[in-house]
Amino acid sequence: MAKVTELGYVGITVSDGDAWRKFASEVVGLEVLDEGEGDRFYLRMDYWHHRFIVHVGDGDDLAYLGWRVADATALEEISDRLDAIGVKYRVGTAEEAAERRVLGLLKLEDPGGNPTEIFYGPLIDAHMPLHPGRRMHGRFLTGSEGLGHVLVHADDPAASHRFYTQLGLEGSIQYHLKTPNGLIQPTFMHCNDRQHSIAFGVNGDKRLNHLMLEYAELNDLGKAHDIVRSKGIDVALQLGKHANDEALTFYFATPSGWLLELGWGAAKAFKQQQYHLNDVFGHGIEVSGMHDVEL
Ligand SMILES: [Fe+2]
Image (spheres, rainbow, N blue to C red):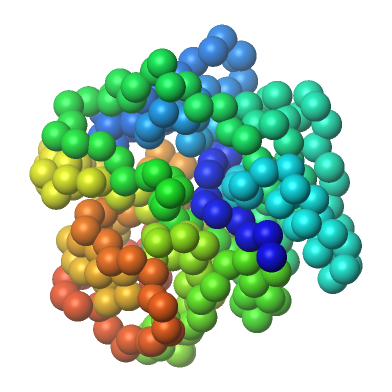
């Protein structure tokens, strides 16, 4: 059965392109790539042409998620499965594939209304090793684990779980969290060794609650933390360690209002599911009101 293999790229809309260029490079260490298109620029994490397409204009939210499959045959299998379960999609044109620097893609929406692309054949710029936007000890953890993870909007978590299962992801509810607003039971799903590539079950006013990127070196997480503190950026959740992915992370505001979670040391995906009531330690709420719960 054909499956998606990684969260390969993410598109975002931003209202302040200049703020994002500075934030992505100076705080996170991402490489900004501008190809003179005017309405967009790219952010690099590794040898891929890009991992993020930043569309400058109206709005500050997720534009689309790009899920990779192995090849054209796998993409055809996935489209057959979508036909069988009655999910509408559109085959991207050659121009649309070229726009994303991939060989082929489908465009659709997940049940939560998140624009979704399934693609194969990304452009890998093997001659262009990452030039980080600021000093780094090591690199971002990508490779077979994709770019990171996202927590996105889902009106009906069970429907979203069914949808992503059809794409080949696995996972389940991994937390029962008591909050002032009642019990929250977020779902986490994986498609490779990364503990989760997508999560849902916590809704806010945006499609995107947060995006998580992982450093291969602890010192790079520490450096990011120093920079966030020195710039006085709002920290939503202080340093702490999740019980499910065991990553040491903290959450802070992006120029778009949604949160960036930076981390290090995540465990690999569960072979068998389990759930938790609490994190291991930390993640104290510092600036509240951005989101009630971030995982
Ligand atoms: Fe997270």
